[in-house]
Image (cartoon, rainbow, N blue to C red; front, side):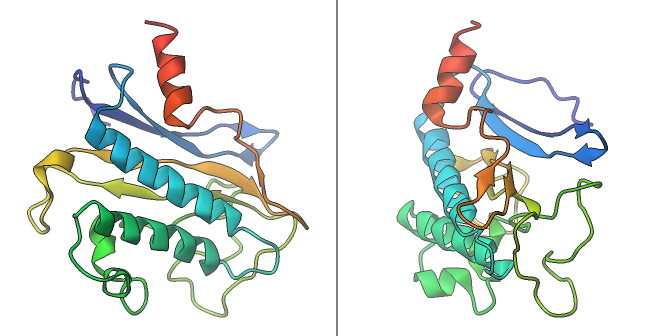
Length: 202
């Protein structure tokens, strides 16, 4: 449990969920304590949101499980280059097996199965042995890219501008025969929506 005080100018990241009739949910939102994203926070947040949207769009029936991870990773890696955090080509940033230097800032997988358990069975996670699972109608999974620039990091270079920023955005997505359905779409996640929501109670 993190018992540190929350200070003005910081971000709060909450990863939570509930169960409905035995089925789990899992959602993450990140917001500024004072109700306004500063410029650096805004840059990282918009990049993660762009990556998440790309990941959701990749959740198509018949696609391999890795498609959403590759989609989010491409956006994140290119964004890290554009922001000057990585100084290399996109190919170098991604690495041969999506294990390149962009992983210094995005250390986890893009999502997991969701069902009777929060991290449900059924395969598809990074590191699972056996053939890669294809997405099929009826599957529910999470899409949750993030970027993290912890102040405690000494193993990688973190520009002062982004030091201490961490953003993750997670939604629950239903695979259909057509476009994916975001089951958690009622929870605000754009910058304008979040700032309006927090500001409405200040």
